[in-house]
Image 1 (cartoon, rainbow, N blue to C red):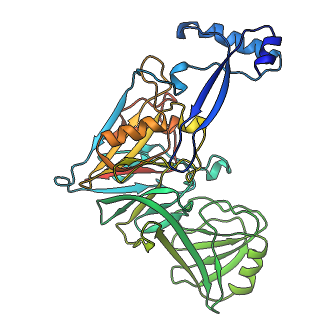
Image 2 (cartoon, helix red, strand yellow):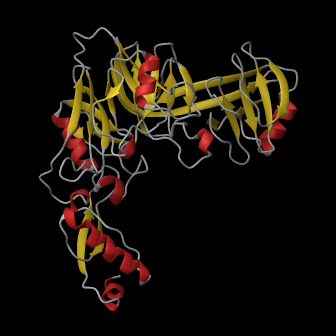
Image 3 (cartoon, rainbow, N blue to C red):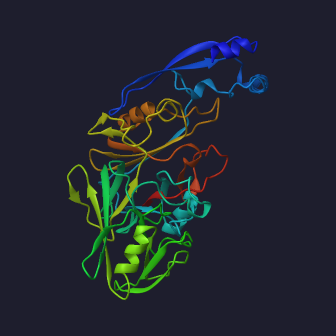
Length: 399
């Protein structure tokens, strides 16, 4: 790359960068080719150079040094909210807003839940149809109802009995059992179905299922299959829908005609191998990466699918949640992408921040333009998009 840049008439420099080691991934040496150095007020000159490079067929972008993860003195602008479990008498809860399928702002979900404060939740699926992008990537339990399946082994926040919070790794097991005793695995919940998949849609879905040529069994609240239909319909209140494609569509036609159908859902704590009780006071939210475990920095980037320079080393706006030794909840946001005001944080920096704040366990939530903390239903930080982004779910503190 440096040779190509030099041949185009520019003077390159080669910078070695090290992607930090995670608990489950080694450090990786990488290299970056750089051209020129301008003050932030001279960005137009940097942009002009990038344009000239692209005209020569060289991929390039303008970059801000404060974002690259090298040592810095900041500045940082962050918000921290801590709950004292000895004095707090309210509760914690997660929310997907008015429906699973559609995205909403965190402040809108805050109003819906009558919350005191809250933050955006985990990652959501931007690689699906626009009408389905509110679907959380990872586990979601709201009021004891499983609304999105877990990514096995990914870190998650679990809330039980209103305000007992812990962080662990979860897996979900969902099984459809017909009245003739035949069983089969349900691969997904409230998301688009892949080939040869059985997916469950709950009444919280809030959208039309995909008309993908599959077959659907509509199940009433008593567990009876009230009809089979071609895929592509609403999920009415008091019902759920099993959506099958390929061989799973054939399975529905053979085992879900005029019969009962039970859908058994389990959420398993992978640390204890015990089932999480799905009661009306149970909530769970998937995180992006584990940051702190048993009071020590332990970044599980590979297990959580984020062992990359961009996610681990580069600075971005971040949202974090932690649990203190006494069981208190710690919420934090670090603003970023705002040179001279706040540079954001790397995953290593946010892990050390949460440990310094007293978190015994902590995880990273969705960041970037999604990062927001709301108090009194209003954002108290500066979202990097310039306004609140619509997201898949949120975590809230209620009276």
